[in-house]
Length: 194
Image (cartoon, rainbow, N blue to C red; front, side, top):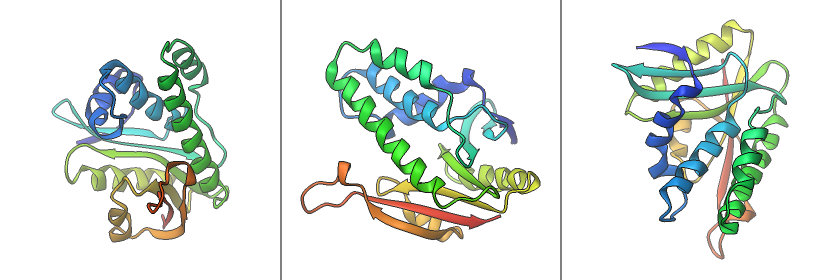
């Protein structure tokens, strides 16, 4: 097991692992894969903090991070993909997802200083591998001089995992765009001292 830089050639493998978790409930598998890839690409930046861990050639976990205000470089990919979709409902789904991620990123940035790093994507596809990649990634961030790591998540994720692993809740809020009558869609910003 070794921490390695995430390479775009591993995108199909990552999408394979996430399509059942993050894609909308539509029958079109090609669009479902595109939707998940759009999420991953929106969370990736062109820096040296995009990591993965593989075991026997199998992708087990990824951790992407960025500095305050650092944004992804997926605009061209996103525009071409979005504009080539003939289904207007699919285009709208991509737009809503992108808007949500952007809103939550900006909220997280508002709590950051130049000494902080934002964990923008964290996925473990095998039990126990999330802690392994984060432990190594946190060592790397510490060596780069960062003091704290912030992240955002929502009620669709295992929020208790963060609480149980030393993250401190900075903000709990409701995202109205995904809330339903009588059912708030909760969002969370967490912080951990490195």
